[in-house]
Length: 159
Image (cartoon, rainbow, N blue to C red; front, top):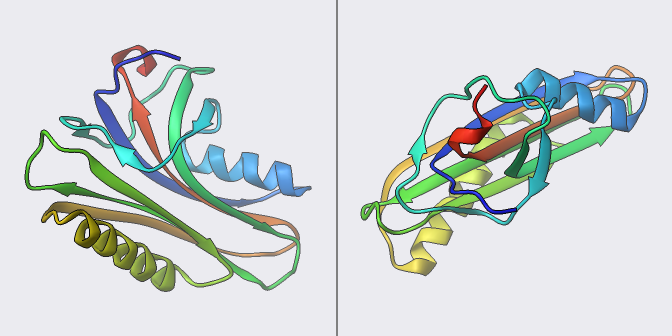
């Protein structure tokens, strides 16, 4: 897969389904990325990438994504998923993405993700220019899923 990533967008969704896989699929649909072929990547935002709101994307597009997902079939269980990015002061340097999922609430997911981003920049000796965390929470009825993702996009992915 060779494409120039020029944009990144964060999103999250949660849903129920008849199985764990259906719950995951439905959560991806709720997040607006269910009709894409996601390629899981490690957690770096390329330099000079524009952070945008999730646009309308071409169905079936092959899209790199850093994502967190959790499913459960335990009624009443609370699930949370979060992703966040931090960008350095120097836009020519890469940013960092962190993912989190657990049997926890949204606030815990957001706080933990921010702490991981802070540590990643401390270790790199960089100063954060911009940070954003997107999280969701789901209380399981039968089979539920929470998912959060940052998709890395090129112009070819836009519908």
